[in-house]
Image (cartoon, rainbow over the protein chains, first blue to last red):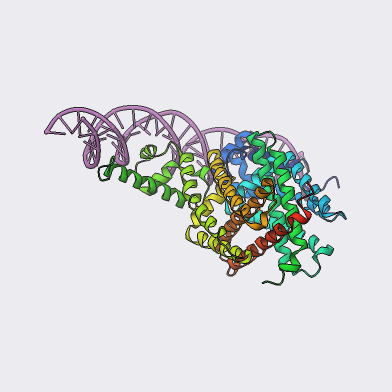
Length: 216
Length: 216
DNA sequence: GAATTCGGAGGACAGTTGTTCACTGACATC
DNA sequence: GATGTCAGTGAACAACTGTCCTCCGAATTC
């Protein structure tokens, strides 16, 4: 597979494409996508403004690419944890720990998603919503296969999954805020609170059938 | 109180100030604050660009004013409902109904808060965070006074309040999205799901002391 | 009724923006 | 080794931005 297609050509293109994504992500730490300038990005990369069009039609398209980069890898991670055979308590701890680590390693990606989830660019909003919906569906399936979920309606399964996913996304956003506020124990407090919240949801889940399921 | 101070002068100023806020809110339906232009706003109002400075130092200051306008009235509303003596089921229904109505009556305000909560302007982010924190604290106090909360630590009280408040904010944001997507039964589905989620949290709350409280 | 305050107008400034077009030159294909 | 593809260039375009300054005139104050 040495003479596939292209070669040096495509590799170089991919490289500056990635440089554009990285530069944009950096600039987006202090502004939102709808105020980001095309020239601003190319200036950081060190290429002519017009070269941008070789890679993206506009900044919205770049934004969608960033969404995939930010959310694509997350699926496998959380899925791997949830599928483990372990007590509820341990699963919660490990999930929160993964979120914490993810925020520490990719803060710019997390901030980007939090910011543009309800941001000013429709295409990006929809991309995030779609990715998060897929994610929620995956979580719902895993939860469904657990013994505790016997007798649950698919509809209720999804509302529970959304509850979990939303909590994780919110926790990630709070960790970002805590980090930039510089308050000392802020991050630890967020983590502790998030764990207790997940625990409360887990308790509600176990007692759902007794008192919640029938009333609809 | 006829000759208070100013008179026609101050009234007129207040009027164009409000016009600026309204115009900005309108423009912000399709973009975010950090990309909003000062001239853009004054053009809609019909005044000279420089007149803007008579009311706000910059758009960030206008944004903070919008936050107060959007979130200020909300406190009393939800507080009034929570304080009612009624079954958990009924309180949930009425709370969700209030949120639903609020979104229908002030969609632009809701969208603004959702968008700028993690948006690109620090001062506005902080204003929203502060307002939401005050709100959460109020909810926590009301919840604390209910019989079910006997023996709860203040810390846990706050994490529960945050769980509730976050759920309401998320529901509001989802209702906005549902409305603009134009899908037929989307809004009803969001409301139904939100009710069940609040119910599950409420169930978890009732069983918290038995299994959650001791493990810390 | 004269003096003052102050919301707003209007011109001008230097910078910036997205997009167009014809172009170059290194790589890829045959 | 000639031919074509195509990532990146650079000049030029009209449109726009935030801010400075001077001025006007009506509401306020004394």
